[in-house]
Image 1 (cartoon, rainbow, N blue to C red):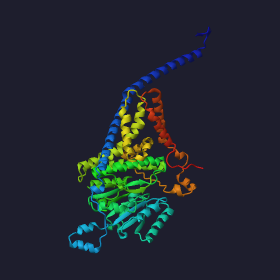
Image 2: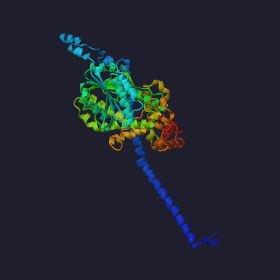
Image 3: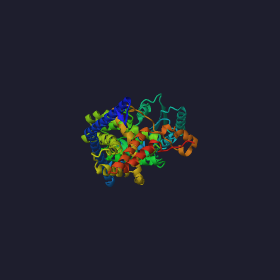
Amino acid sequence: MFQGGQRMPLQAASIVEALELLLSSTASARALIGRGWGWMRSSVVVPVVRAAVLLCLVMSIMMLVEKLSMGVISLFVKLARRSPDRVHRWQPLTLVSAADEEMGMENGNHQQHQSSFFPMVLVQIPMYNEKEVYQKSIGAACDLVWPSDRIIIQILDDSTDPFIKDLVKTECERWHKMGKSIKYETRNNRHGYKAGALKEGMKLSYVRSCEFVAIFDADFQPSSDFLMRAMPFLVHNPDVGLVQARWRFVNANECLMTRVQEMSMDYHFKVEQESGSSAAAFFGFNGTAGIWRIMALNDAGGWKERTTVEDMDLAVRASLGGWKFLYVGNIQVKSELPSTFKAYRYQQHRWACGPANLFRKMLTDIVHSKKVSFWRKFHVLYNFFIARRIISHCVTFFSYCVVIPLSVFFEEVEVPIWAVFYVPTIITLLNSVGTPSSFHLIVVWVLFENVVSLHRCKAVFIGLLEVGSVNEWVVTEKLGDMLKTEPTVNIRSKVQMKLWDRFHFWELGIGLYLFVCACYDYSYCKDRYYLYIFPQSISFFIMGFGYVGTFVQNG
């Protein structure tokens, strides 16, 4: 072989031939891979993406219909002025003397006078290492206006910190010396967590004399007239098994995260709870700020520890037993929102995983229940569980954080403009009615809810499949007045975390995925999805790096 008039060495010629063969093989392999990907794209990937888009469209319509129906019911209740005291019997309770009772019996009005007696009420406050809030909650319970011989306050302390246990016990003893009927109860274990504590509390002998039980979490402070306003609904309406009050948040203005939480929670109470109460006399017990008729509680089988939403579990069982629930929105109880992102994530995991797991456990019982109408069964199964506790969490994450961003890579896949813009806009506006004063934060609320939907969606599948952390229970951290009263060094020991612990890799991963989708859409597409994908990506990064909620920097 010759090159440039000179003979090329045989070894060099062999190398050149090998390189040419390799390049030819590489080109053939690339062409083969290209043809394979083309087939895979057209035959598998695109149809799967289209099916995912269709599924998201169906779920979006389901959620829109559910939101609209709840909004219409709530609007009707307000316009028709169907307040609880207008729909149900309500008269103030008055003390009746023995002489009046005897006169009533002689006149044949024994039942009327008996209904005017103040019934025996048990007030339960479950606690677990609640150093920041125990004094306020115990004080609020002891300040309730009710005859002193007709009320028992029960502190169920599962604290594992001996110092905190001593503080709570001392506080109970202080109120006992002031003449309050207050009981301090502890256990040797935390079996069943909150449900286990409430269950053990109901077994004590002095509880047998009680007809009703009011339950308040440790960070809740009812006003002194709470019982006077709520109890008449139960006394005068024997078919009502539960009266639920609304939560009012004392730390809503602490940070931006608590502001957007307030928007979601206000919608839950003003629309979801009110529509459920008005349309089907059923809603999920919120676990606190409510009063149960003990007969209804016992008929439902009492407290069970099988899920992390023991309150919802009890409510569903009681509803299937024929008991009616009543939401009274004008009775408000002070409470605290989680102000650290870590605490909020744990709370949302429990609130999303527990209902999904409860749906799995109770599906058969609901279908075969014979004490309630078909309408009640449908409401519980579809409206309460499927639409609100499963579909709503899944569609928010999959549609707006996965499928629509993914569609930018496939020009064959079209997403209707109504699904991208009109439906989420209407749903967002409906959610904003709960807190009109925060309407200017609606965009922030949307971005925040989409990020949190990642954990809610993950929790739903954990609950449905009953795997992993399905029964994980982490008590929501409360800061109380710590930010106002404690020295900065003590605050840091409470809320600061290691730098590495601040990173949330799920959020960072989704944020990177959305950023790539937005860049591709900006460079090659004309649908302009990047206008919302870029902000959503930034939101995931902000929360992924821990820059959200109450945080005190080191140093």
